[in-house]
Length: 228
Image (cartoon, rainbow, N blue to C red; front, top):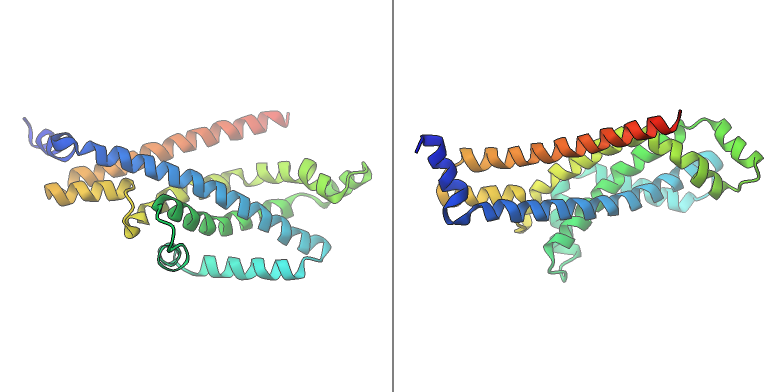
């Protein structure tokens, strides 16, 4: 057995250590999906509030709250936010996947909000006027005319945020959560072999990101074709 094959066997096959990687992938994907859902909900709500305030006025108090939220979340490290959520806010919650998803979702929401807001603001003002001339109220104009166009404009940026969110979950190990990076670290601590588990984890992340990029590319192509 060659040197690298032997190291591979010790790292992943021996004592079924590959299970650490599989369990890590499951938690990583689950955390990312839940956090993405939370981030999109928070982000779109804040984007609508802030863009409405900028265009029509009103929402002074809500806009001020949103600005404070954006400043705090974007001005502090993600790891620190995760630790605060774990040790100070959701102390009574014992499901670490939920804790991590909430922490990353709140963090992602701030960036999604600014991405979506920029997309809304980039839509020509004439689109608002066209909607109102058709008898649509502001809500229907935003839902049926503005948001679909804004979504197409910001899809690449949202895709980058999704990929960033996936990679940020690698710090979940700081709260003792078994995710992909933590799984590789456990294997390294048991075998004292760093190369195989670390590069193996990196390869898994790369494959997941390439798959997400492929899906986003397909979605962008379909949206472009729908404009024709």
